[in-house]
Every structure is written in structure tokens, then in C-alpha cells.
Length: 447
Ligand SMILES: NC(=O)C1=CN([C@@H]2O[C@H](COP(=O)(O)OP(=O)(O)OC[C@H]3O[C@@H](n4cnc5c(N)ncnc54)[C@H](O)[C@@H]3O)[C@@H](O)[C@H]2O)C=CC1
Ligand SMILES: O=C(O)[C@H]1O[C@H](OP(=O)(O)OP(=O)(O)OC[C@H]2O[C@@H](n3ccc(=O)[nH]c3=O)[C@H](O)[C@@H]2O)[C@H](O)[C@@H](O)[C@@H]1O
Image 1 (cartoon, protein in one colour):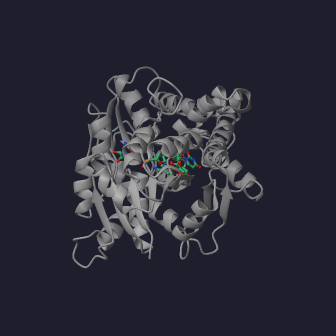
Image 2: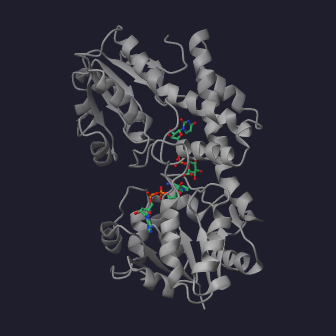
Image 3: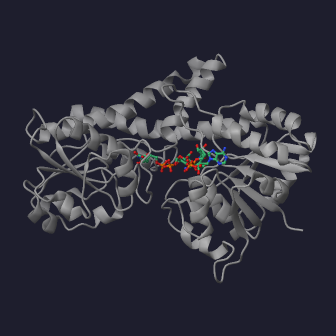
């Protein structure tokens, strides 16, 4: 008999995981505490934009014509407890308000809601990113509070998907990491990730703390690469070097590699920034804070970039106040192919200029609704062309393909000054300069 799977928390991670599990052939039941999300998912619609996800939902959500019917959603914990052999916990673990530490209240609440409904053998699998030590604590909680006692086991299975590639990354991960305490949990997870996902994919079996640490270590390493190249960009700016060439040249050494060396306004999103901070906070609790003091520098290099983009804009506009200046901002999301504006560097830069008196107009292909919610007082336009109309400066802050495909000549007709500042080092400088634009980018000569 095939395993039955539940997915608790149907956000960016959970909705994708639920749809992917159905694609693999399992019967899946997803739960969220937000009924509006569940209502959308039940119609095969996504609460967020993620390429390919809506198609996958429509392929599997029960009640949709032609679907496999393997994927259902609910808000009822008793139904989830009775249904699942394996329960994936995918709820959010944000930064605590005003602190570096991780807010574990959503995970704790999800496990507390599920526990009383675990009456027979079940495996609860944490996928959320948590401080090391959480799995130990939650396993003890389950043993004490689930009617099934020791038969309600826990495992930790961190997730490495990237937004914008969530479906692809879930169906074709580059590794699967499972923290387990016993053979039964390992066997069940091997069954979940058997072919086609598991074919040829490294399957790393480890203990709880190592599994939890693999996740925060991976995100810390990625953040470090980005801040490293942004530090080099700062030096290039001071010395007149070109960070894009530098990144290309060091990247040819395959010990360094070319990926994640794009200098610009830095990293944002719902993960890298809060994960490195939570990691530092947890290391402090463990008395190992010295080991991670470098992450404080990674964080401050990253946050500095946003202010430097604002200053670069001010300087390009002749210095002084932004009052009376019209600034067009292309991009609001923290990365392309996502509608996610959590801790978005683009929105932060737009907001800073707006708060300093600039007249800012933002356009983003998918992030407008979320951006409006977070920053309702910014100006918004329906197209890139509308955003740049009459602008004194155009800021390219999220590297959507749509922006790379813009025609600089046509856009130039609409602006006041043909001045573009590329905060992502993603546009072709020559193309823009040939069309009469002053093109400036972070960490590159002004030419
Ligand atoms: N977004 C991403 O790309 C990735 C996220 N992660 C980790 O996955 C976790 C989830 O992240 P996202 O999906 O981005 O967050 P999200 O905020 O998009 O989704 C979380 C969902 O959990 C629901 N929820 C909250 N409390 C609940 C409860 N007690 N019971 C049931 N549902 C509850 C929320 O309503 C929401 O729909 C975080 O720990 C994050 O660090 C890991 C890898 C990738
Ligand atoms: O834990 C998570 O949630 C996820 O966090 C990141 O994924 P994600 O936040 O979706 O996006 P990334 O592609 O890592 O980009 C993060 C930020 O770094 C920026 N970035 C990325 C690469 C680069 O070279 N330069 C750079 O500034 C992006 O613009 C973006 O703001 C990790 O890449 C995933 O492996 C991980 O699962």
C-alpha cells in the first residue's frame, strides 16, 4: 500500500511540496491555518506566484476535471492525523520581532495541534528551517503528547529549494538530507524519496543536529559568497576596478566556481537574512558565538549595499536632496520569477528614496500586489514604460528577464535623462550606452 502524506503549512515550501508529492504518486492532504489559502488551493490556484506550480496543482487537486485527484486540502487537524503515515511540517520560522532569534511559535503550534491526533504509528518530518536542537525538543514533545507515544516518531529533512525554481528543485533536488534516530524513519523517508526523485540523488542520513545544521550552514555559505563579492565590489568602486570581470575571472577556478558571485544590492528574501541571524543567535545560546561572528560582517556588508545604492543614485542625480526628483524603480521582489517581497532589497531602496522625498514609481512583473501591501505609499505603474515616463533616473533592482529584453531606445524616448543604475549587474552596458544612456552599475567603472 502506498504511503499517505500530509503537508502542514501550504506557503512557498508547503504548497510546492504537497503538489510534488502528488506528482510522485502519493495520496496527499495539505493543511493550513489560513482558510483563504486552502480555498484557493482547493480550486487549483496558488496563493503565490511560483513557475509551474499552478499547472502541477491543477494536475492533481481532487475535483478538478482531468486531475489525478491525489491532492486534497483541509483545515481539520483530526482529518490530517487520521489520514497520514508521514506528516511534513512546512510552516514559517521567521525572525522574532526586534531580535535575531528564530520565532519557533508556528512550528511549536503546528506540532501541538497535530500531536493529539496521532493515534497510531506515524512519522512527523520537519522541513522548516529551525535552530539546532529543535528536533530533539520536538521529538520529546511528541513522545509525551501523542496518544501513539513512541510510535509517533520525528525526523528532520531540511529543504534546499530556491524560489522561482521551487517545483524543479523539489522534483530534482541535488541532495536529500535526513536526520533520523532509527531505521523505521530512514526506511519511510527512503520510500518517500524513491524514484524518480531519488534516482542518482545523494541521500545523506545523519543525526538530528547535523541535519538541522546542514541547512543553516548551506544558507550561511551562500550568503557569505554574495557578501564576499559585494565586499570586492566596494573595493572595486574605491580602486576603479570592475567586479563583474573580477567575479568571472576568479570563478574560472572551479574551487571557487562562478555561481552566486553576482555583485549588486545584495541578498534578501524570507530565508538568507533571517537564517544567518537565527544561526548567530543560536550559536550564542550554545556558547559558540565566536564561531559565527563573521556572519555579523556578512550581514552588515549585505545591508550596507542598499544604502550604497541610494547614495549612488543621489550622486548620479547631482548630489543633494531627492526632493523633486523622479525615480523609476524596475523590480520590487527580492529575486526574479517570484512574487515574494519579504526583506526585498529592491523595495527597501525604493522606500528609502521615497522617504527622503524622491517621487518613486515602481514596476514589477509579479510583485505589485505584495509590494503595495508592504509599501502602499510608493507610486506604482502598470508597465516598465509607464514607470520610466519622465524619470530623472531609472533603477534596475530585480533582474527579471522582461527588463533585460527592454528596448533601451524606446525607453529612452520616455525618460527625462536616460540615466540607468543597474543594482543587479544584469543588463548589457553596451546596449544601453549605444542607445544614448548613461549606464552605471555597482562595483564597475562609470566609463
Ligand atoms: N521559501 C523558500 O524558498 C524556502 C523556505 N524554507 C523554510 O520553510 C519554512 C516555510 O517557509 P515558507 O514556505 O517560505 O513560508 P510561508 O510563510 O510562505 O508559508 C508558511 C505557511 O504555514 C502556515 N502556518 C503557520 N502556522 C501554522 C500552523 N500552526 N499550522 C499550519 N500551518 C501554519 C502559514 O499560514 C503559511 O501558509 C521556513 O522555515 C523557511 O525557512 C526552506 C527552504 C526554501
Ligand atoms: O532556505 C531557503 O529558503 C532558500 O534560500 C535560498 O533561496 P532563495 O531565497 O529562494 O533565493 P536565492 O536564489 O538564494 O537568492 C537569494 C538572494 O540573493 C541574491 N543574490 C543571489 C545570487 C548572487 O550571486 N547575488 C545575489 O545578490 C538574490 O538576488 C536574492 O535576493 C537558497 O538559495 C536555497 O537553497 C534555500 O533553500
